[in-house]
Image (cartoon, rainbow, N blue to C red; front, side, top):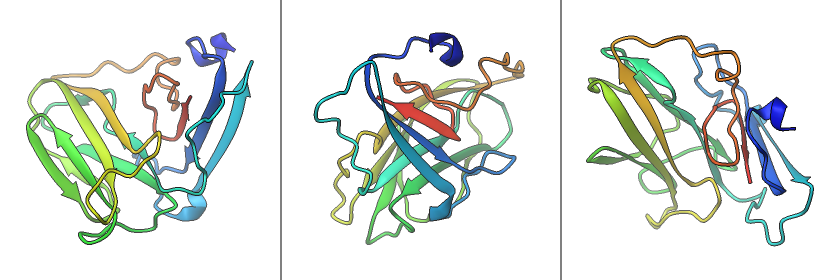
Length: 175
């Protein structure tokens, strides 16, 4: 198992979340473009927090290395939610010391980021402005901006998220 993933998979219950994406990594924003699979590796985790019928935020982009001066795609997939609005569900983002809310489910772009590592936090908020419970609804990822980016090695370029949260985009497994 570990050879296939590139890391050790912890025993217990995991959730594989898969959504379709376009060639430029934008998620297809359609409820039919998503699937999830709950599986158990070696043992079952009692009281695993995943509720397939609840709203979920699936982080997609940004990730990896991005060339300075280019627009950086900020994208995610919504499961069991078909829209965001200022009065309804919305996504709070924090990058550095900048925080705001996303109220439309469409791709967004970050511009003029300086060279270096950056952290982006996405949190799904309910109509009351409070975070929505769920194992994926508050996610922080680190990505970089550089003068140039080396192509990823084949094992590193696979689109998968491990249980420790290293993001892929089109497929995500989280225990």
